[in-house]
Length: 220
Image: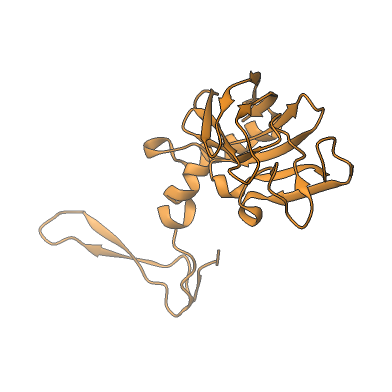
């Protein structure tokens, strides 16, 4: 933002209002305006798009409430926690989206997906599915023959964790879904729900199976 710079910042003129007795308009007389400055209005103080990031809409979207929400996040006052297990059957080429009720006003979160193979991923997410970030393990086989750590973004790779699909000879996420052919595509907040989308890879040799994973999550 820019400060307003004028020749006479505190100079005003009283102008009589026509047809009124002892009623005046208070008219600024700033002289030379060197810098108009940033206007103080909704567009510069709190746009609707910015307010949405703090879970605010309509008359609730004030600067004060946005600042209060920042404090809540920093102090973890608004956090909710949970755990859920999935054993759903999933067919070749099928997508399966699970919805976890998390309550209103949640905009950010993280979760750990753990499989029966003791492999998993940590995902940071928000309301924008493209902004999810994953940290996990690379594996070149079912047992995860390499234990090297890996990290990537949903935006960059196109999914959260791969299973049978190989990227440069590596499987990212090392079968975190509990099914060697099932990857995790999306993790994001939609309204009052946390959404997790699984997809069974339709590559050659893939067969139907079951998810076998636990999800530990927290949102705020």
